[in-house]
Image 1 (spheres, rainbow, N blue to C red):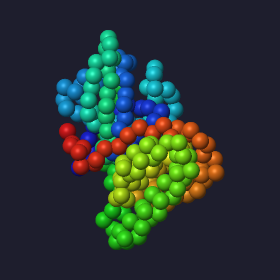
Image 2: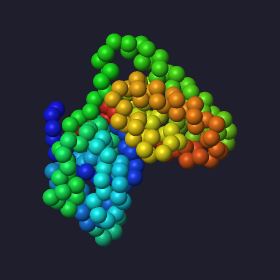
Image 3: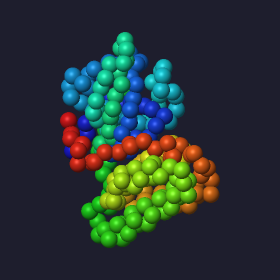
Image 4: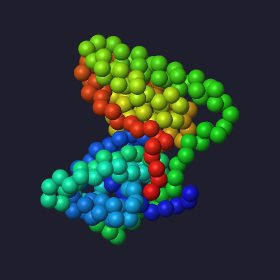
Length: 227
C-alpha cells in the first residue's frame, strides 16, 4: 500500500496498534471529521501533539502516528459523540494539508523492518524476557489487586510485535518516551528500549500508580478489519 490521505486528530496521547481508545468528540471541526469518516467508512489518524493544544488552533503533530478505526459511536448530547476506537497500522506523515477545518495528511504505512528477517527465535526470546520483567515489575504492586493482575495476564500478547505495542501502552512513562517506542523502526529495538525502561522505572514505581487502574485496552489484532 502506497501513499494515502486521511484526516489527522492530534492528541496528547500516543495510540499503539491494537490498543483501544475512547474519545469524546465535541469540537465542530472534529464533529465534521467524524461525520465524514462515518459517511465514507473511513478511519482517521491519531498523532501525538508536538506543540499546541487539543482544543483551538490546529496543533503541530509528530510525523509518526497510528490509524484509528471506529468500532462504536454514540451521540452524547448536542453535536457530541462518544467513540470507541482501536489502533490499526502505524503511518508516517509525508505532507500535511491545512485546507479543511481539520488537518489532513498524505501518509505512508510503517511496517517493522525485522519481522521477515532471520533471528526470529532470538526475537521470541527477547519478547519473553520483556514480558517476564514487566510482570515482575507489577507483581509487588498488585498485592491488593489480584483481579487486575489476572486481567493483565489474560490480555498479554505472546507474539513479539503485539507485545511490544501492549507493553509500550502500559509502561509508566511520559508520552514523548511512548512516542519514541512507537517510532522504533524494528520490533527488536522497541523491545530492547522497553527492557531498559522497565529497569529504570522499577525503583520509582509507587503503589496505586495509574497502571494499577488498568482497564482492558487491547483487542485481538485478528478482529481488526480494514475499511
